[in-house]
Amino acid sequence: MLQQGWRVEYSAASDSFTACPEGFREFYNQRRRWMPSTFLNSWDLLSDYKRVVRNNDDISIFYIFYQILLMVGTIIGPGMIILMLSGAFSMAFSLTDEMGMLVSLFPVVLFVAVCYTCKSDTQLRVAEFLTVGYALIMVAMFVAMAIQIKLNSSSPTALGIAFFMGIFPIAGILHPQEIGCFPMIVSYFLTIPSMYLLLVIYSVFNLNNVSWGTRYAY
Image 1: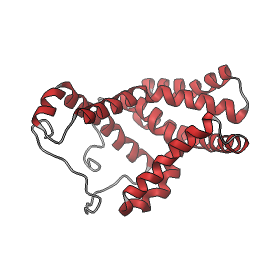
Image 2: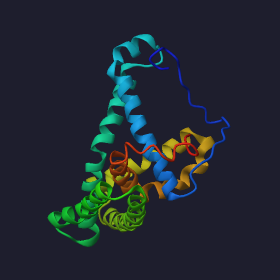
Image 3: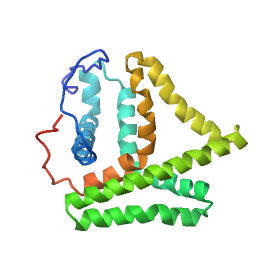
């Protein structure tokens, strides 16, 4: 649609009804389908971006650049999460950088091996277990960061965290009709490793899995 000059708009006031996933496994399978399709749609849009910009007055070169950043973020996201977890282990549990990296890589290698050798149900059970474990690690990381910010509020780490956290209140102010979703930021932060690391691995190893596609297609 965008390539042919159509415009897609977001409406916060619209009413829509759908059947949403009710559990972890259903949600993971939904996101497993959405992630590759979103990536391929973006790739299709960017593959002929000059024609898209020429045909669609609502798409600028800045929007194309934004889409490129999203694709790059998806590709390098798992590596960034591993580095973040390595730092979290080092900061929260007083480990060396080398030990923190080894500890952060162990569950990743384990999950890759499970996805390569086991069926989807086993993969989801392991992903569910690791998600809970990563959530506990994120809690420890936030406590350690809070202590560090209190000790030195002008450090680069404190300023970076303040800048990152400030994005979400600003988004809530700009979209007042959805301000009720703001408390879900807690769940978002706790599940960052699961959504940006485990889910990517699970999606890659299940590209040929077309099941679960009727009840939760949208």
